[in-house]
Length: 466
Image (cartoon, rainbow, N blue to C red; front, side, top):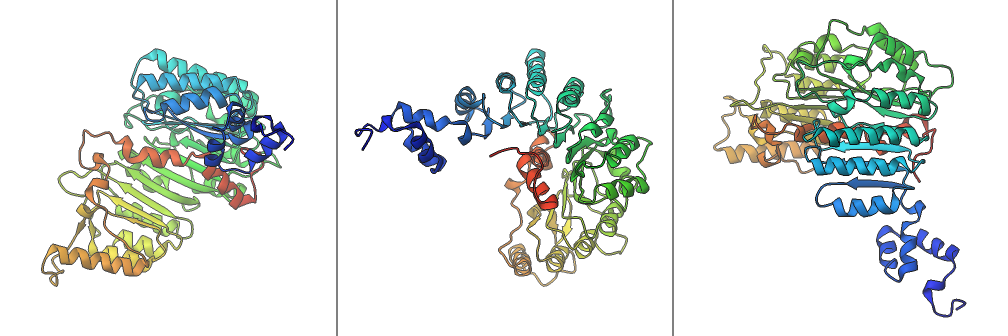
């Protein structure tokens, strides 16, 4: 061969072409051939998207990748334990490296918790590095702050920098939070009404506190040529006197016809009490989740079925069990979850933790909605009424229930064992973040949102990753 048998002497264009045809595993194996081949493992086109996991198992790998790839990566997701000072420092250092890139398009923070434990210095360093990353990278299309309350409180400068440098490009912005005390907190003076200047915005996450009539109007009246908003996620904590009217939602949906709405109640007894006032018939509600609000409201569940029969796709309720699951009185009416399954033709997921469910109603739900992809109920939350006299023992009853539901769903189905249930459902001292952070952060994942854009409008309008 022309290289005289010396594989290291192959022309660069040939090596690059060979590596482009290999999988990551094969590229890694090929890179062990020699030092020159190893250099081709880290060509920019092979690492446009990196998930930096800064926990103890992934720390060494992430440090190595940040040293090699931070200068050209385009989409960076940073997973870290926000209760560990060392990992907060690592996140700050990584954001500092990304700030020197200049071409980063997506920055997604994924903290383990909604709060930070540690010294003020590490948090200040993280916030400053985040500001520099937003300021120096001029092609951002996606930014997620990771539902951390303290980051949101200090996000005014970040938002101002986004408005100054990224208003033509930004497609996806996520500024929701989870409150440590949802009944008492101060609202930061940030001025979220300015998000309407993002002319390419298609996905937005905000706390309900900041979803004002002015913001709704300005987003509905964006200039001609701006793509419509496709995803809106709201976190409800405390509810004030001001409420959005159904006419506001109707006008908003008219301007954004493909909009999919997610409503999350997190530790919000106030939101649960005001839910009937929050829910409006014109809302395009797709996902509703309720986490540790202390109760359920049958009237609100009935409203979900009545208002959103053609849009609702998932319902999640996770509540703490105080001696026993939450019992609800239907006043001799039909069970609200059965009625929800009957009315909502697009329902795909139903998760009920900490709520008492009659086994007959579980069977009815499966028969009414056999296309359910997910039906998750812990075994400790199912009960058999006094009418169930045909069963000789609990094992027989459990087997019969699982057989009937499996038959209706057309797949093997079982009740969720207790060890698969988040500890906070059983223990008040357990960290509740483990029960919902994964779901809340999934709402803010760029790959999921970009797929939604493609489904709704054909293709994303700004390139993000190769």
